[in-house]
Image (cartoon, each protein chain N blue to C red):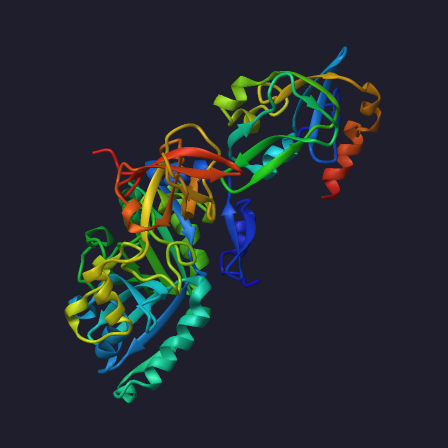
Length: 379
Length: 128
């Protein structure tokens, strides 16, 4: 198994280490519920160094990325990022990712840890077939780059003491906290350039910091020291999963895979059909116009039950009740205290408020379809 | 430091038993709750059910996994702990006290002799 630069730190903090996508990562330090609630109420710090970082630059990059990814990359100003998807010819998702324009012709893609090899092979193949390939430079920097995510309502209170600003690249800001959602800036940390973006995977305010691997441990330690007085806790992959499930963010391998399109997964908002030709466009255009065979729905258990889990059957109710689909993500929601999840069903069953049942270890338990996100911050 | 009380008997599968006359109280150990972490759901056997030693008679679910609980002893279920059903976190906070699972009227008390002493259980989890 591979280890991030924070392996020693995880051990010191009592992290329970498990295998994830070929990496030895902490699933939790104290408890998943504690860490989840810390992120919702104060702040949590995640090691995301296992994720991949690809740098693509040159005059042909914008055109190359716009025909390879579903969102419209031309929308990005320097120092701005967008959520986007990379699809195959059938519109099936190869990966979901964040794309940042760092400067006019330089882009950074943050890709899923479990998909690094597949993504890199696909991108290299697409680049080889791209007529302006000589105008594009491609670098997989995943092995030498690390990242951390600091997420929660109190992060703004202490991130300034970790990194003062102003930015030296990307979005021009005097302070890190001046970055708006999806904006990124280059900042100085111990004399080295690092990138900080106002993005996250938890549904809370927060930042993600990308830096050369040799600086990640110092970044982690300084953030922990700055944030502890405000309730910052280290948080593992277990809390990362419960947090993103509550706000219905997809996880590759669950909501998304090579046999599922962004339209079926309910993320068609990030597919720009009218930007010109891109991989998988025809299938997605047809689906947007005519509908899909399956739809991603979110549900909440309506009674105390064991947690719903991936692969559990989803049943319709009433006369003629039958298995109509499967859970792809499920858990006990730490914020709501009830089982929640997402799954795929045929579109005629996909209306909010439809009662369903989830088959949990041989017994069917009542649930109901709810709008996304399942958890919404109280106003 | 994992807690292994000296007045209990233990099963290799991490259940504990506290005997009082002909009735045993059964739960899971501090080591087991620590491995499971956040317990979110407990399913207990119905009162009156006849159990044989080794039967899977209860289920404990954490955020990440579901675990079967195997009865270390045979007998009839006399009580199921309602408190742990409505507040599963008791399994984590008080595994030997309010986090108990069920009481069983022993049909074969000799089975207790096959269980581990606190020292034997301590040795088993130290080697884990």
